Length: 378
Image (tube, rainbow, N blue to C red; front, top):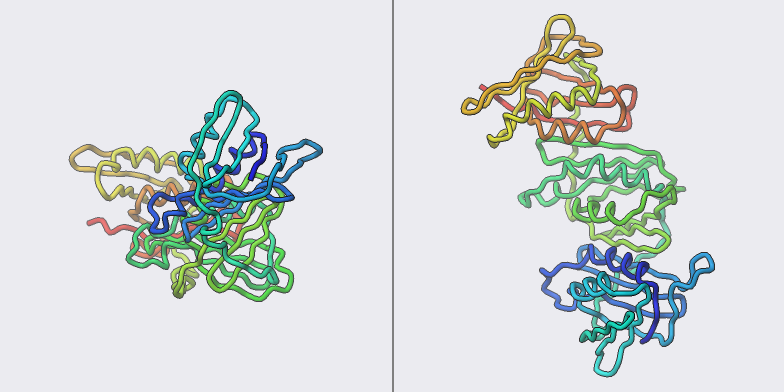
């Protein structure tokens, strides 16, 4: 194998596939990146057997030559060393050549590295997915859907199914739900699913977090293919495979209250800043709890008490308050995460009592909601 390539394109691809490579793997060859030079260009692959990423660098882009293939072939190189070498090469052009005994020479300017390679035939094959049922989502919408839900997945392995985001597709609508049983995030979107059947799958939160790091902010669509145990996200130059979590996701529909006893509308930014200030004194403790109370005249009081440190009290105006008086306590971190995920300058918070979950939505937008369980404070 021998090819010459522009360093920037190679580095970008290496950094993309590195997101799937881990040093903690039981299959030694997976600590490497597989490189294949073929007629159309160069393909790089990284995998940890849960996530696999394939990045393709085409020979030409808009008339500009990016890769010159001298001899086709393949090799697996140690990911950690290979990525560091490419990062620090002195010139913009890189030549990669596999010699006898899989020894691989990497040249750039006056610099030359020799890395011991592994046989690419021993690298596990990527899942074969038939692409009959595909649906498309614009990249920026997909990134939004993930960002607005994935932070609510559970970080504890006691219930593995909750470490993923539940994706339901039916009637050209995608519903994404994440919960760690203390809070819940839900986001819906219209999609182009053609006449695909309905799906109900759980995608690991870790996979989705890696995916949004790789996707660029474009309005191009991402093709999504869901099978029995894999999901594939496909863009022009990238294939991103993730395994799905096994098991049934809990029915979260029952958690979301239908009616409310107190409705509060506030300016998102003002409310977020007040919660942030109140949490300054609450951060020391494990609980990070702030209190909210409705007051006469349409104001809201946000407060926090940490006995060994001190207290903070702040009053903020609300746009409107309707219903019963209320005093409630909740995690400041959960509230701030939820507010950062919501779009819109004003939000509506619907309470059904001091000990019941409450729902936060942008005003006049039913496509997204955040739900938080209050904290008991005696």
